[in-house]
Image (cartoon, rainbow, N blue to C red; front, side, top):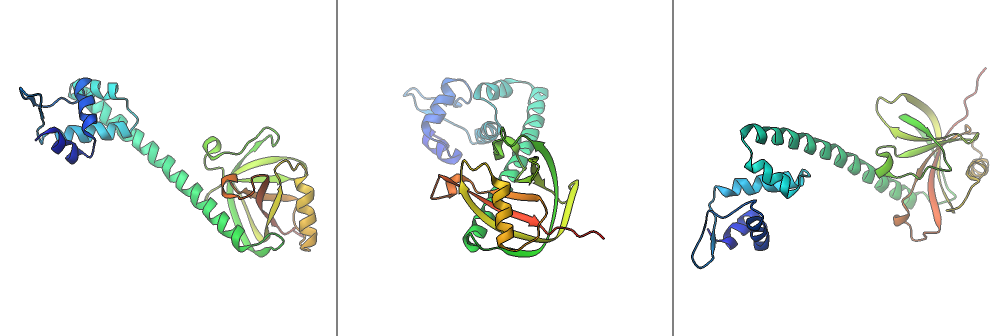
Length: 236
């Protein structure tokens, strides 16, 4: 088959095949006297492997070396590619969960106006790590599945990852509400306590917070936080 036919079957541009020919990655089975290239249907499998290895993170030069290697070399590449793809799937699964969390947070923000609250029975199971709130800039790419914060009124600050078998667990009646604050606000515990007093909710001095990504907001000068506070426990 000619270059156009082969490129169409492979789902690539003709110039991609020209480039692969030039660098010796995938050469046509023959070149006619008029310069036209011909490819065999058996080479479709080779193109599949090139595309898969590229998607796995290999460079074209690495793939060229793999294709030129012996069976043992190719077997090692196959094993490594499977591991790379497994890692990518894990990361993509985490990214999907993060986006769904933010989608749910945005929906809550639209359905629960600032100045209103929701009180319900809640249960949280999570893992956490303590961080310096003045130095920490929360980012999914930096912290992965740590998707919310926990702040205590003594200024101890944690990032939390929700987990079905986490080390920490809390349950009971909880209040949730949104705060819109200036991005530079430094007195967050006081603002939360004032809002709790306005709602007449006797909450613990420990606040769970989710932050709305700025790109979802029309006003980039504010920060939007969803606050969850569990009811203060009474001990006799």
